[in-house]
Image (cartoon, rainbow, N blue to C red; front, side, top):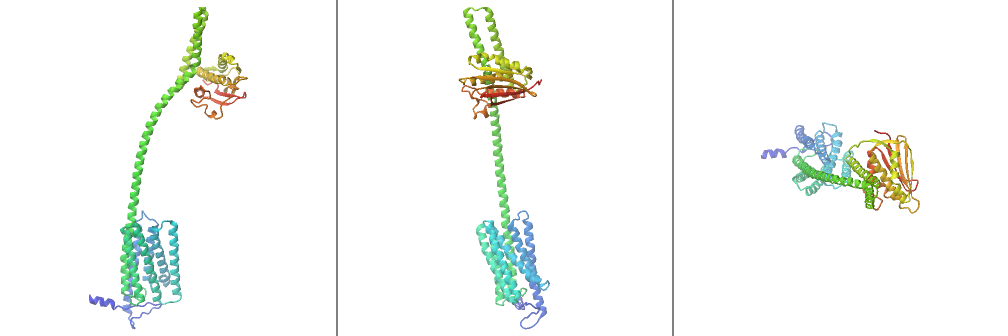
Length: 516
């Protein structure tokens, strides 16, 4: 053991200058010198290969989770490995590569190494970029000074001292950053990277002391205990650092996967809640459908009541007339005529009920040829007594021979409703009261319009006059216009409202001609 220790310490101390001469204790011994240089060259080559291969392996292991920090970390140690390989190849490759290019990679390694850690520490992208700019400037300053030392042909010992001092300072800074990282992450990975920084800073400190005090290898490839220490500390630290980096990234991967599982669980719960909402919605729609059916039934009843009011009124009048005549002992022919009117009114009630029922059951009722001129005259004549009593002038402009295919009872309901609305509207006038019923043909359609000089429809109510239960009359049901539009559309026609030339309201019905 002592002999081995004696042989290591008695190895020649090398000084590699700008030429090709070596000096060892004042005598020339070429063979031992070549053997010593080969030993250090081999160590540097091993370091370079390990530093070159390991980042590639780390990149492959993290191939599915490569973020910016991974690329910077692996890139920094690739550059460090290239630096070691270029230094190991000195005298084998051109000097430009082993001096200038090697130190460019060394400076790049420093920038990327600190960038990978500050990426984890910076709270914002802007702060991280600002820190990178500072490191780039430091790296450029290092290269500028080193190249200036080369240009001035400063001794290699001075250059080596400068390089080792800068390397030691960079790993001291790296150590400070890893301490901050360890405090933030508080895991074993960050602790291993801190150990890496300590070991590398220790190795470069020993190498710096060896160069300054001449106690170690002289020159980059000089043999000495400081070279052995820096290689061993760098290798051990490098292994610890990469294990720590992998541990941090794997922990991040599992954390991201757990977050994804949590999000999936949340999404599953959300889908289940959505399913419950959909079930509740379907139940609600079912209930609304049943309610709608009940409401529709109510609408039918309301429509029937609306349309049979007039024949019921006629029945009441005729019944009262019949009762009075019977009490007076009137002649039988008069009673016979009244009874015929009663039966006609009852038949009309039945027709109205059946017609409305067909509309709401959406059954196709039997069509017939309807002479619109004749129908409008009948409606106008039926209202003469009411109009005369109310001092209303009802005029007609009816073209003859306009026939359509439709349902007589339903169309009578529409026009009678429009006429009754016009009568109710002009009753509000204290002076002249006018209603105009017009029938004309426009191309292949019949146009029926009923206009009055009443107050018209209120502006705010006009857009909603076709809605159910919307009425301008104080005692109105809001069913008539809604039902009229339903019947007109059932006949493939349209109904429109506008202001009439008489100054009141005008309702126009367009019906297609002769569709059987």
